[in-house]
Amino acid sequence: MRTEKPPKVGAFADLRAFLATRSRVQIWAAVGSATLTLVVVVAFLIESRYGYLPPDPKLIYAQSWDEGRTAEDVYEARKREAEELARAEAEAKRLEADAAAKAKAQAPAAPAPTTPAK
Image 1 (cartoon, rainbow, N blue to C red):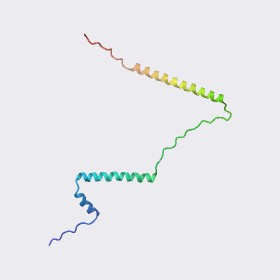
Image 2 (tube, rainbow, N blue to C red):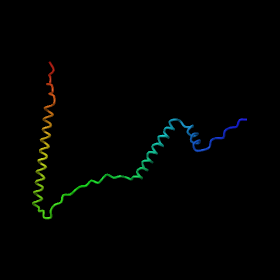
Image 3 (tube, one colour):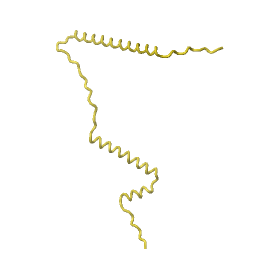
């Protein structure tokens, strides 16, 4: 007399039986969902382990002056700074004009326009 095997009992057997009733699309959707969930959970675990690392602070240094600085000293310093800025802008414009002239000299000549015959 033939005896039947007892049904497998356990979580994996139950999962396998459940997946056997599902289509291939449903299985791939479940795998994708589980993968995405795993990625999010791992990201949170990594963040909790190392914490949020803010960028290094940007240090801004202030200029310090002597105690006996007068208003005339301030005006002279501003005038010097304005002159330096104007010199730098003039130099930048000159360099830009030189570069444009050099590029124009190196560019091939455009063909002369032709007029249609009548």
